[in-house]
Length: 245
Picture 1: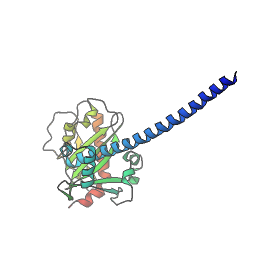
Picture 2: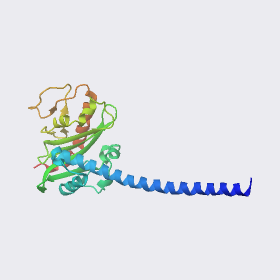
Picture 3: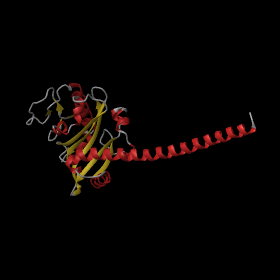
Picture 4: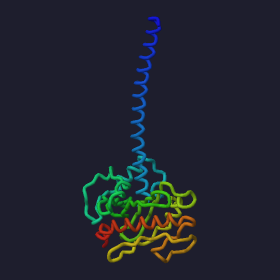
């Protein structure tokens, strides 16, 4: 090989190394920037869930992401408690409901989002409680808003990871979620019964505060939601009982 060819190959190799380093640095920079944006989007989505449950979906009409965060900061106060209702030290911003769900119930840290009224944030509108459980195919979760009377469901927002479209996935529909509004928690001596989806659909349970019209073809998802709500209302029971007037 001639000296000229050796030099050319060396230049090409050096250029390739430099190009790789530059591209790698740019990709790392872009990735880090996207990661920050993703975190911000996830945070706003969580704030939307809490505000929709606690104040109603219409409370967010016309609001942009920054405005949603501004409203959240104005009206929401966060508490972290254990299953005995005792306050515990925890960084709510780093708290994962999914990771807490994997722990034994008695060891979980339970966040409570105390939502104040829009025109008077010091007055409690609702207590929003996150819950987590299993549907038909995968996990389901919800933010449940309990009125200041600590008895009436003021709002609820469901989501899921993999329920069947048109069937169990309907838990994300506003109409389905609205079926829980006005229903009651039933306080027993040692437990709380949450309102339950009933089997079948198209029934009127207006005068039965513990029954919620179900979803046709989604019985297992409904049972999973019922089990989730009962389990978490009982975890939060000491806290909720302490707020009863």
